[in-house]
Length: 372
Image (cartoon, rainbow, N blue to C red):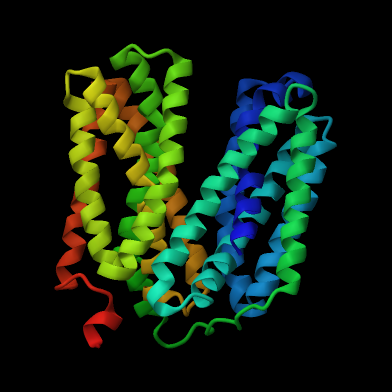
């Protein structure tokens, strides 16, 4: 399942690094490039919803293998595209396949883990996402100069290999179909899981995405140095995800989210307000790495709150993407009116509100630990 998530993430992450070369060869305008990114993002959201429905109706094996096969076929289509229409259609299909995997992947990864190790399983699942981002960048770097098409073909091979493995390994059964408590599960989705997952998406796709721009403008870094600095933060995020997953097993997901939110607020305030560039850089490094820790915690909360209703896992992921997209647009609009520093200061300290979700847990320990 982790390999499948890596494959799906690689597929959906290839567009950005190869877009300059593809645009030059296919004569895509800036508007066409933006449309391609929009088609991909929208299709991922739709794929998340379809994947949740497929999980309930077909089970996690078909719900995972099918989307990976769709993604592989779409990647092959993109690799042969010689015009704008085929390229855009291929990106939409890539998004459907990659997004469709998430619900089955998350459900099965949680179902196969022991209850006391579910947080650690979510940490590993989150690392697969980071590995997919890294693999997409590596494929683009290795093949892009000669032919960006090879990167898509290589990603298709990864999807096919993962699909073949998932067709053979032992898998859990289907989750429960929607029942009388559907509204209750939906309320649980709109509570702590979406609060943590939405904060993670808003910080990752919004705040952190503007950090390199801020580093160049406020600290005088070169664009290359800012990109390298962000790469270091991405590497540190792997350790942050493992640590967060382990802590969620020991202390509870809500308590872990609350403490991570406070850490983000403190470091966010530091890197947006400190006058010393070196101190601000150090705080920003911690902030960018710690943001990734919220992902496994949100997934653990989702499995605990409504994981038995598999269709809602797709809704959960789609809602996260929507929050991240809205946050990115809001930060850009606000920065153009009041400036980048005050906008990012507000955005960076908002995760501190996660401290409020720990009030219902008392000791903050997992339910199994409290019940003995």
